[in-house]
Amino acid sequence: MGAYRRSHKEDKALVWCIRNNICISPRKAKWKEYIWFIDIEKGEYPNRQWIGTSPEAFGPSEIWKKISEYQIYYYDKRIRKKV
Image 1 (cartoon, rainbow, N blue to C red):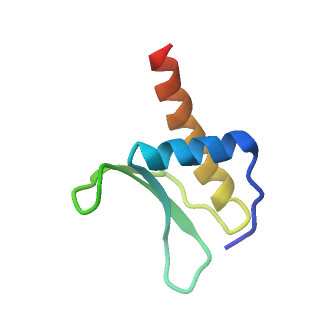
Image 2: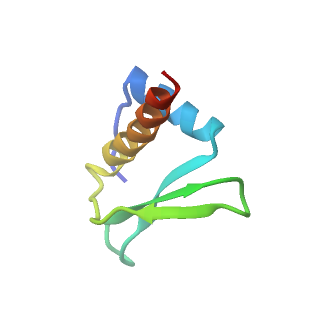
């Protein structure tokens, strides 16, 4: 998988997702190919609730960036509700 350097906000969103039991992770799309989907689940293992999968697959150069975008989306969505 490709390399990606996270920003400070992306790190905050990652930590927030972990603390709030939101799991956003890559899942291999095809055997022996470098293409991934993004799965989103909420809750504690083993009783996680599946929320969804990204509609498109991503290559090694963009997978971590897209995961960070999903994490920021959930982070911003929850923070805005509290204000």
